[in-house]
Amino acid sequence: MLMRVVRVLVAAFLAVSGLVLATSAPAFACKCQAADIDQQAERADAVFLATVEEVSEVGSRFEYSLTATRAYKGVVDRTTTVRSNQATAACGLGNLEVGSDYLFLVTGDAPPFAASTCGGSGPATTARINQVEKALGSGDAVNPPPPPAPTMTKVEESAPAPVSRLAAPGGALVLVGFLGLLVVGRLARR
Image (cartoon, rainbow, N blue to C red; front, top):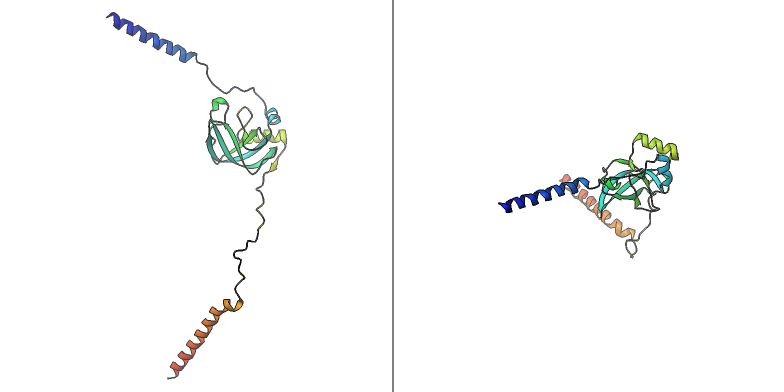
């Protein structure tokens, strides 16, 4: 009986201490200093509008393959990449929806750029785009690179076939057709 009471008391103690530890754990959430779009754009190395083409996991981050359509600040290629924390609690952008447009305010001088919600990156709403255009101007369209110039590639090292060799099959068909007409003509006279 005494053993049973001790077990119940130990179990109750463990349960209560677990609740205390669980409720006193700090809440992890993204904590940024509030900034307006002017401050965020000033801190960003590049600001651009892009469509998400693909999302892949790279360690604890997401890497977004993007097609940039408009650049407001910095140099951005038509196809580029951006990385962000997976966890939105760590100010990451999370798993962005493929095919959707987003406004990216990123840091870095080359892809993959770094982005976070604290930096101002997020969905491309009309209001956000208007704020960016008010701060940075209308931006420039990001055009695809021109196609490469065509180059001639020699297929074989041998010289091309002579014209007589190319014309021989056609000539043979004409001759067979002519002979066929002669035979048909003679048979028709009989």
